[in-house]
Image 1: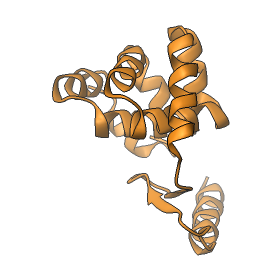
Image 2: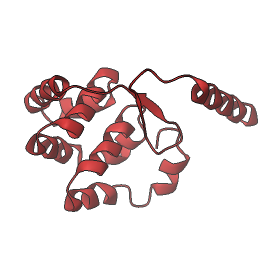
Image 3: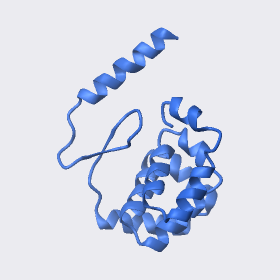
Image 4: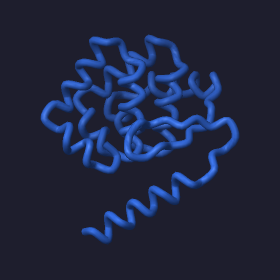
Length: 140
């Protein structure tokens, strides 16, 4: 187990030393920072269309998908407030599961950043009793 932890620390150090692409922004105040290239309004519009056509199960699958989560983050960051709020509402009931997913945790973080206060509280309450598990989880 110590060897695994040492390998994880070494991988994190190597990742931290990689140069960022031009125009990238550091996000994710958790155990590892992620470089996110700037998005364009067209990406947010495409994400809004995909999200509005998706039902709750499809949206949750998108949140865990490498490309789908980027579309959701674009929607939450740059999309219309009503579309972003609808997407955030659909995350309810799955926040804990998404918080421990490699891609889903980024969607939850962005949703918590941009959601109205009452929705932030609802989402955060889903983590009640699981905070330490999330903190210790590599994606939490």
